[in-house]
Image (cartoon, rainbow, N blue to C red; front, side, top):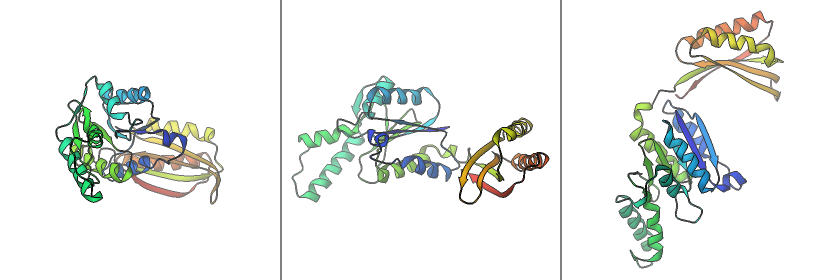
Length: 268
């Protein structure tokens, strides 16, 4: 399973709209994987530590977005170390990458490069990760993210950095998981339907076909179909088609009219 932790007061207050969930669904789907859960949390160290602790204690692959900078509201690095019970240390691979970035900025602005200046020392704090962490390369500005336990990964909140870093992690460390969540959905539009009437049929289909999930998506004001339910099945292999035919037969037996069939591959 794959989970996301999306951090930042600006998301919860509405000052910024979250874009990470949609992109994560896309990146994982391209690799035959999926998002199984998401947690949003503000810049509260106790809550961030608790959510990271949940990720550490579970067995899921987790991507955490945001809070790994060096300003007072960036708590993620320290919270990860606290959740792991280890100290923050300057990563030996992160240090030269950050110093290289500082040199580049000095050249761009015409300022002298000083490895020991207060500004440089603050920037080096962005390379302080939980002891034992591995770095995640940042193709945008060299300032790396980090990974712990081989499955809990921390990237910046900036999409231009976070998304290529997430893609790199998936293709470098989790290629063995590609394709594991690939499935198929088949559905029909049932105009004017009532969920309570359809529920026994849904229960029956799931009981008859192992590994198949039935879903019901009601709408009361659709511009084309009006009040309706999109009723469907999802799963792997030929049982999807078999369950879908059984679903349509069940609708016919109930006297329900249906139309507009849809087939969608999930995680492909």
